[in-house]
Every structure is written in structure tokens, then in C-alpha cells.
Amino acid sequence: MITIECTTTLITPEGSSRIQELVLEEKPVGIFLNDEPVGTAMVLEKDLEELAVGYLFGQGYIVPGNRIFEIQVCDQGRVNVYAEATLRKDEEMITTSGCGGTGKIARRLLTERFPELAEFSLNFDQISELVKKTLTWSSLSQDTHCVHGCGYLSSGGFKICYEDVGRHNAVDKLMGSIFLGRFSPAGAAYTTGRLTSDMVLKCARMGIPVVLSRTAPSSLGLEIARRAGLTLGAYVRPGRVNVFNAAYRIIS
Amino acid sequence: MITIECTTTLITPEGSSRIQELVLEEKPVGIFLNDEPVGTAMVLEKDLEELAVGYLFGQGYIVPGNRIFEIQVCDQGRVNVYAEATLRKDEEMITTSGCGGTGKIARRLLTERFPELAEFSLNFDQISELVKKTLTWSSLSQDTHCVHGCGYLSSGGFKICYEDVGRHNAVDKLMGSIFLGRFSPAGAAYTTGRLTSDMVLKCARMGIPVVLSRTAPSSLGLEIARRAGLTLGAYVRPGRVNVFNAAYRIIS
Image 1 (spheres, chains in turn blue, brown):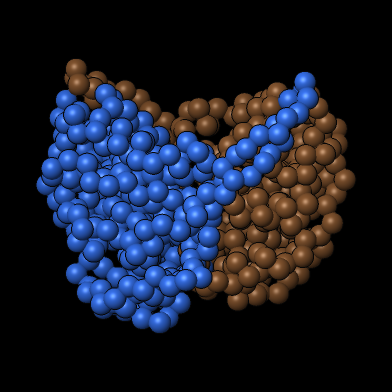
Image 2 (cartoon, one colour):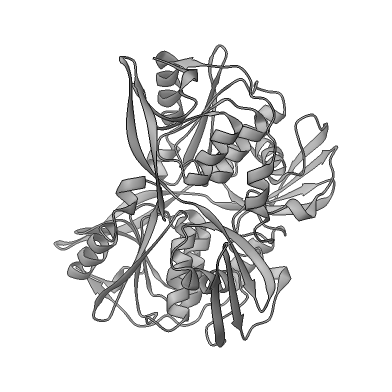
């Protein structure tokens, strides 16, 4: 069950009527690494393997190259990941606004070295495919208006779209799938959400060379893109990209 | 400085041109309670007093009735709050997806008692005023496409709108201003963002009786509204509210 049907009261100055609406199910999922609790995310309960691995990557607990031994998606909102990793409690705040620590976020963002980006460029046929297939991946977004999508295109065409309540979680799911070797990082990610610092940071750390958004970047998102050298495109439509950094990877 | 001007490359299948864009400045702000670091939020650096108090309230560190002795907004992204409060480390994860702890969020959400809601109802003149004044509060949203607004109306009319990168932070700023006694909780909050669990939870804990959104609620947001008895309206326009709970406070 991903949506819940409910009856609502539509009120206008002229009166009221009863209508049916679909509401997206938001659930807390606890993520454990080697039996240690790492965090709880409010998510769309779908693609939880990818979510858990992407979340651990986003928080800095695991890095590409670390081996994943087992992933258990349990009942009652818990995912156990067994992996080669070191718990680094002092780095927990990197990507999550609202977690412990102060200032460290900015200092790390400004100094961390990124891996070399994979080689990749894309043309407007690919951009159009990526945007259209992401936006029509499922009916969840139009049914509930409560979902962000993150689509991915690499060599050979469109690969997948992940959906979640939070734009960050949808990106985490994509990071998880790339971490798990399902897709190459040589590709373009397209999100329906804004490219704030944490969104761009994860892509840069994964080595993804092209990051696109239906909407805008923030200043820190742009700063990270510049430092990593990745192509950041905003306000992307099938026939239009507004490129804020490294335009050479978009072929007109 | 809240926005940064930058030159971008607009690319279409026909070619490219250089244009100017405004990008919203996103900054990490560390919040300290009685000299103890509580957390860091990625925010729009504006209304930081309200943000810090609302953040501490949202995380469960302070509750209405606790005295605030002093708030120092320092340079370099730090706010010190001195207040009557108890640090409760084990409750840090209540509102923030991505923080430590597992499952506890759900259990607390499902069991916590809310304060009695203030008495308040609103008609379509007020709804229209609240929506229109929130959406035209500043040009930041249309300039940068990277801002959420949270407007507030109580006895006497529209009061204020807070803006931030995150819809959660904009709501935190409103919570802070009500906590500080600047406005009564007997009113209606209107957010341009979705009503997920944390958004509705803060309003319920503050005793705000009407919570409205330009867009959709999630299942947990709705569940909290039902348990608190607050009026949850979605897809709100000046002449239309789709009420998911407690429709009697909307006068058609």
C-alpha cells in the first residue's frame, strides 16, 4: 500500500461537496549498519534496499568500493545493511540539515575532494527522453502531488526513476542503485526537486558528471557543482536547459 | 546578501545564449542552546532568531512556557539561545528525517498528547488574504524558484510570511515567532510546501487550529491532524479549500 484513499470536503464560497483524494503513505524507516542504528528517514516505502545504501553513502558511512555483504529489508520499517565500513559518528551531519554539529558542514563542503567525474555528454534527444520518462514513470505524483522523482540516463538510454516523499530520498535511492553496481555513474541524473547542497554533493561524491533539475539550484548547490566540475542544468525541459556550470557536456 | 547573480548558458536544440539568473543563498547555521551545540540547519540567512527558537521547539528541546533569556545571532552562521530547558538527546530525531534513532519517531507520533487547540475559524475573505499576501510577500520565490513561504493570519488579519530554502525551516520560523509571543497561536498557517508529518506535528504541538497548504498532505501529516483535531486544508486557492480534516473551521 503506497496510497490511501480518503474522503475530503471541497469548500468554496458557494458551498461544499464531498470528494475522493489519494494521499501518499509516508513511513519512518530505520537504517542499521552492521547492527548499529544509523538513522531514521521518513520515506515512501519502496526501493528500500537502494534507499538504505544511498542513505549510508550520503551520510558518509560507506564509500564506493566498500563491500556490501547483505541487505535485509525487514517488516516494521527497518533495513539492516551489513557492509565493510567504519562508523564515523562525527560526520553524521554532512548532508542532513537539522542534525548535530555546527559549521563542520560548511568546512567539509568547502574542502572535500571529489572523485574524478566519469566521461559523459548528452544531446537533446536524451534530455527529452530523461525528462519525459521521469515525469511519466508512475501516476503517483499526479495522484498524490506528494512525490519527487529522480530519473537516470546513461549509455544506452533511460535507466530508471526513483520516487519518494523527499527529493533527497529519491536521490539517495539512485545513489544506492549506482553504489550497488546496477548502473554506471557515467550518466545524467534529473530531479523534479531543487538542487540544494546535499543533492549536488551526493552526485559529486558519486562521480556523476551531469545533474539536472526541473527547477532551481541554491548557491551552495552551485558552488559544489563548480568545485566538482559537474554540469549543473536547471529549469530543464525537453527542449531547453539553463546550464549553470560546465555547459560543454550538453550538445545542442 | 540573500541572492547571488550569475551568468548561465541557455541551451536549446537551436543553439545557446548567455543569460543572467539569481540564485538563492543557502547557508549552514549552527544552533546552540545554553552553549551546547544542538544542530546545524541549511537555511536562508534571515529571521534567524525565530528560526533558532522554532528549531529548538521543533526538536523538543523547549516547549511553550519555557522562558527564553537571550538570543544572540552571531556572525559566521551561529545562533546562541539561552533558555529554560532540558537537553533531551534521545528525542532529537522527532521531526528530522535522517537523524539518529529508529522507530521511536513513529511511536512518539502515535502516542504524544497535543495541547488544546486555540479557538479560530476563517472565511474566504481571510483565506484569500492569507494566500495572496503569502505568495506576494517578496520577489524571492519568483526570482530564484528556490524558496518556500509560510504565511500566518490571526485575529485582525494577515500577520507575516516567513521564507526559507526548506518548507520545514519556514515553518520553524513561524513557530519561533509564536513561541516568542509575537503572535497568538489562534490563527491559520499557510505553507507553499507539502504537509508531511513534521510540518503538521509542529503546528499541532503549538496549538494552531488551522493548517493550510498550496499542495498536498502525506498520510502521516493527515494522521497527526486527525489526532490533534486540527483543520487540514490542501490545494488551497483564494476561492477553494480541499479540507482533509475538521472542515467546520472553514466558513463558506
